[in-house]
Length: 130
Image 1: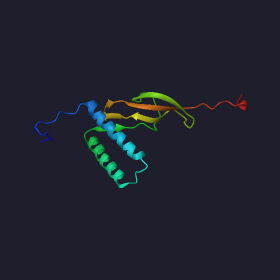
Image 2: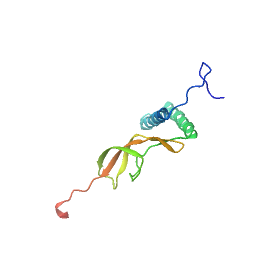
Image 3: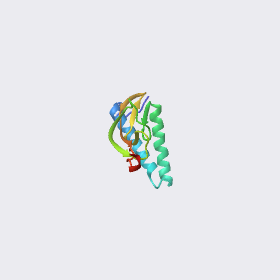
């Protein structure tokens, strides 16, 4: 028997949009903790472990969150590109920031990732190049 509310009735099943929101907020919380300068604190490490457990539970239920940061952009990549940003240190178009992650449910996308893509900058020709 599954969880019930105080009235004895089962809570409604989560719809895919709500499930994607939960997974996205979990992803954001973990990123915030990872970026925190106070990650050395016991409380931050404990919170990260709890969030990791939630992420593991979601994965067991078939929910997978994908952060595309650092991945090269290729044809058919299931992302929504919000903006292209010149990046002199890149050799090919690469996701430099994930604004919203992809969320999959049992291998099927229920949320498309939103990303910022870095583009290589062509070197400016100098007088000696001409």
